Length: 196
Image 1: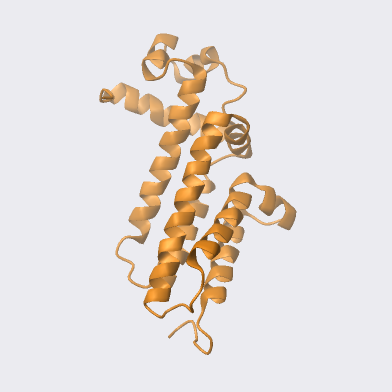
Image 2 (image 1 turned 120 degrees about the vertical axis):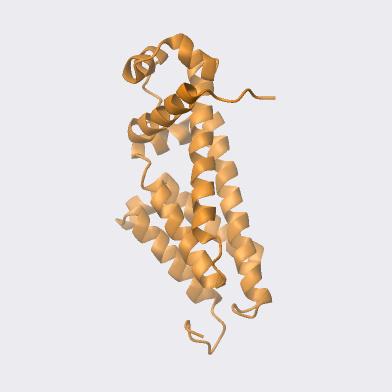
């Protein structure tokens, strides 16, 4: 069982998350982090036993918080098309908080990459559920929901890693908007207008 965080520890994690999102974490030592946050290394060790474990904790916290904020954003949306659009817009907004250095560091460090991959799989599952709901409600045409969700998951991964946005010369927000359009247009029932 994990001990509850003190208010100071929670504040430090918030500041640490902001630092890592802005600058990445691969180049920072625990001494650097302690100096930047104006705390002792022992205070950091109370949060995690090493810099690597601290990175895993902060990256996990970021993705968990992002998922919670996105879920709040879509709560109560009855229209499955609106849910998909809002979900992807939320993902774009959350990703805009992360610097290229942070994304690169997450990708380069296997334990944080594993956290990222779990998050990407969860996003694909969430999109799959939206697609299946749309098919069941006859809002979307009959499709292989798992296949569509996996394709969307690969595109999300390409956006999150920056590979797709760099190749296309677009922002993350533009890429997520295009993904939403691609999904919604591809799922639309033949002869149906988006407003129906």
